Image (cartoon, helix red, strand yellow):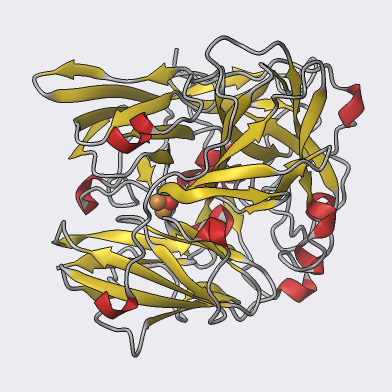
Length: 506
Ligand code: C2O
Ligand code: CU
Ligand code: CU
């Protein structure tokens, strides 16, 4: 069943990390006329809760090659976990000991990272836990995380030298081909909350991704498909997939529903809202529930961020509403003009929701409060007077003036410490900064407390142009002087060209 991997000269690219201002604005010929689409039902990724054997809950994932029909009459070669595109949703229980067997059948060196999970560095699935073609790697760890929506994806670091990137060996390529899946943790607290919890019925996973295709259906990659030096859009596009289908249809009951939204796009930032301008309620962020539902009409979701939201459809039987990205409102505030494609500044639909009859035992109210979020006191940090600095560099891409080097540990942190990290962004482009190892909390944006929906647990923070963000994080366990954790920009093309660094806890 295996096809030969298509590694050829096409796979190598001279990637300019040079001046953004010299880049040309991309065209939008890849746009699909959204009204011409026949709406397909929203696919729900299968839910896998593992097999319990001898006190260990075991999951099996296989990275494999696939074929999808994204565009009418055309076939697209893809990758997926246990299928053609994306992967099953892994359901885990806090306190369980789990083992995940990951088999690599894509013909390229890969890894699989548990994004947001609090695991030992050697089980993290980062660039150092390579899985060679044909091999199986097993990650095992106790589930320590709070109930929330996490995800998994490849995280290989392509060899980079002389500005030549072996594109298919990188994270951007492999995720774009379809390797990503959701991971849900439940715990005793989430059991007690009066939230919709019927997976796929009123508790809906939404994996948002944008794609560009060739006229023959192939996904766009470096270097033939677009030249990074002249086409700044990189792996952004005008085909917006939700769970692998463009602008699909979801039928739900007239009741409160939960949407678990994951931005699994390589580079796209969404400004989410609904077509009827209704208020919705964010109940969870990357690493846990918020203290109380936060009413919102818009929600910026950057690459790798997750948000659990409640939408009250109790009075909407018979109606259709759309989940939309209102990117026209972003202006140049997140993506500067030379790096924009048409969709950075236009509105587009992601999902149509058709409201049917109320189901039995439906949740019909939004709770007043959720959980106690213990804010980490700044006094707990060992470096409160002088936070650890991280400067995001775009020319060339790096952090603190350095490009990611697999052989260099950029930061050593003492086990047991709590630290404040200060991330500064001197660029005109926003960068989603992600830290491995465990969730953190956002202390401030430009010295001001962040808004209510950012006061919970996070593992990605969008650092806006010319902004300084402080986060606080505990490094209380899993000392390992050899195996590092990563910190990086989660725009995957930035990460791949070196906007990443490594830390150990010792
Ligand atoms: Cu989503 Cu370093 O990872
Ligand atoms: Cu991660
Ligand atoms: Cu970036």
